[in-house]
Image 1 (tube, one colour):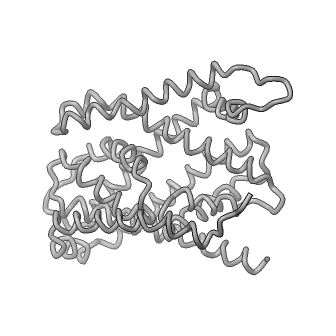
Image 2 (cartoon, rainbow, N blue to C red):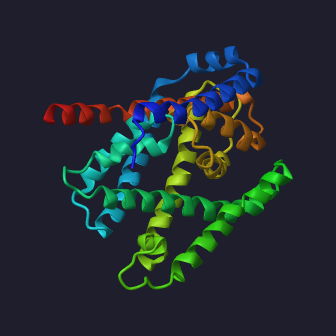
Length: 307
């Protein structure tokens, strides 16, 4: 089989994402008063920004806890600090690549040489699917609340769809037929996903729900950083999980820049905040995530020196 060089395929995969990111940037520029946003950011209050960094690092700690549980169930080596390192590597890598799936190379690189890449990738899939399950179920539970807000009807119809697809996937996994002797079907290769429907996965789904609300807390703390005359309602903590669900369906950005801000303007609009406040808050959350991911560079440099 002929292998196409990466130098030829990578530009083809990247340029459409760059175009989409550029279009999102133009839409944001036309929708928002950039000068007003800059004024808000200039008046940022340092103590609250430090608190935002601490909250963001707390999310990293929870992410490492969830992923580490899947790593242990698959028999992968390493302890909590190794899993935390993988999260940092993933976060810092995602800042410079156009897709979070490419950023997963950071987690792959956090294990010792000789560790099965296939097993590592399974742990990443379990972690990601577990997160999507928590978001889908959360959106379903929040549907009655969202129905009372000023959302378009098509958006309310779309919210329960991820949960419906999740239910179909769970039934598919549970009713997976036995593999034919001597053969491994595609379904058999995906049997590791049954980890997500076992009783021990319930606490991890709960942890995913906590992580979703945790980002909502980040947005609330970020609003405290800005010198606002208006008070940001606590309902932002509840609406941010819906924003996460929409954001997860738009994996076209560098470190979520652009898509996160666009989703924030749409999903958080019913709070009655101005577009400038929502954009400024989202930028602060993205900036905090970027700064918190920088320790991952230390592990990258150490890895290069070791090689």
